[in-house]
Image (cartoon, rainbow, N blue to C red; front, side):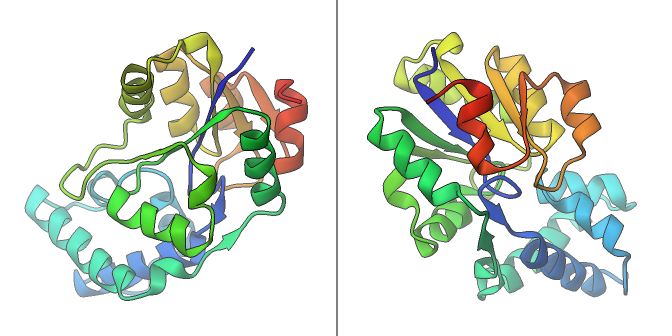
Length: 215
């Protein structure tokens, strides 16, 4: 049934929480906000940084971009590589490619960073294509990224499956007209995945092909 499998990055392929929250905390300290609580820092995992800074703090657009710039500077200096791959992900990606599936990375993280991270952790070889916004693009909208792949590669919606850990991933899939797997091991909440309309739920990477009937 499915031919194209699309993966989110943060919270789906990698546990990147420490890297993101550390960088956000440093950026906020430079904007005058010291020792912000972890539960607030966690909200930055998933959506775009610009959207998150605007949502959580009374920043003007100019101030939000300044915070983004602070974040990116420390992030790019090496913090971005402080991630771990979730159990079973490399094996899943390898098997998908061996069985003939097209495998895509669909992330709201700027492609300038995500591509380097995926290469650093040794997973680039498994992806047919990697899709993400450029550095000047503040939008968290996964729908347009999914639709972009569908259009560029001549895919059919009913043959695509989006895999992600937050409602941003599931909402984007629903709006793009594709099925989805909400993974519960990431940073999102299970109830949000359900309410957003996830077609399937998986508690681990190993469960993904089972619940979606991939193999």
